[in-house]
Image (cartoon, rainbow, N blue to C red):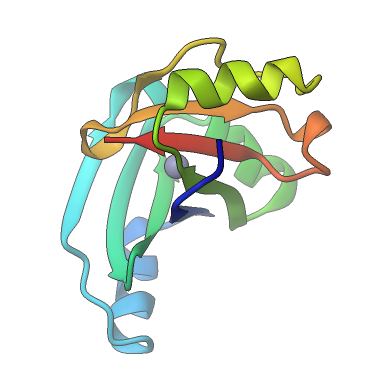
Length: 133
Ligand code: ZN
């Protein structure tokens, strides 16, 4: 199974309002959704760039995954998300290929998508997400 496109690029930010301003003023994009994902302890903001989205992630808790990431590495690119026809199958195929999974089965992400993460140890250091409608 192969991805149909890059669904989004996840970018960790320390201040959502300031980052939204950058993407709107400098790049001329418009933020079309802001959503809190309590499960992942983040507030997200979305922009469309063709078929791909930019997902800004601001931590709502210093102990959450984005809080720890920003603390360790500073703000920047956090993950890349591939649109897959079937996340469940894509995850199990990856596992059969020896990839270490963060999510053995899909869970609910922002925008009502089904998502699952692959461990960056198995992907050349890139936190990789699969998602589908
Ligand atoms: Zn994502």
